[in-house]
Length: 358
Image (cartoon, rainbow, N blue to C red; front, side):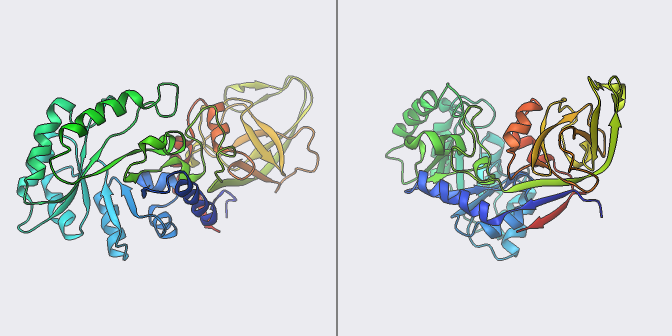
């Protein structure tokens, strides 16, 4: 078999949920498993995180599979229903649905007779992707509080700058002003905090927090490492050296000869490429571990292979283990070298990559 493997540590996953609990001890937790649990496998992650109070995802078919597998927790569809045909299965499987625009409000009028939904009303407090503007949200609130198909109402928003200097105060001000207007409009719950807000802004924790990237052992902050935050990597992507070339000064590597050897070098070819999810745009110098020693990529990433510098690592020959990211080498660091974020690396791991649970 091709030696490329994504090893998923369920102990690390549960450890990271423990970090969430310590940061937000009075809040319930929606574990976010959208995008196939950031590439880790939604069913696997949901099963392992039995300590989470609910599961948040996007696709109704994934939520239905969790229900059919016996998951009785609150399952929240963060983008709500995409068309009216989803009302019946959402009701039948008791799914929590977000409502973030007028069409979804109208859709609710077609709910099956007797259906009762937990609804998350999304308020646009400044991110300007989804949600009702505050001046429109009051009418939506009034409609939902009086709608026969609504059992429980939760206010939700999403922070745009919790991970940087922009902070959350400007969005919390908008949300609090809206919440004050509906304070007498019946009991509701509140969910605002993503990973960055869980870690940095306790005033946002409220009834439900929604950790995503931190569950998978990566940092939401560009300037704070996952290790500093006490997080452990859940996915470790490993492969092996499948060829070693001895280069002379001036020899070039790979497509377009993008890297020229400045001196005599040993170069290893690794079974991993962009068809596996490794970023094609990762430049020369992106860190890897070869035989446990830190080294770097060289030249362009190919579809199925990439090249690494083995100069100075004489023990690393054909068959030597290579870590692309994970244990000992944070996906955040690899992503930063590639000009992207760890979210993208994890989500991009291809189906052809073998997966192993530990």
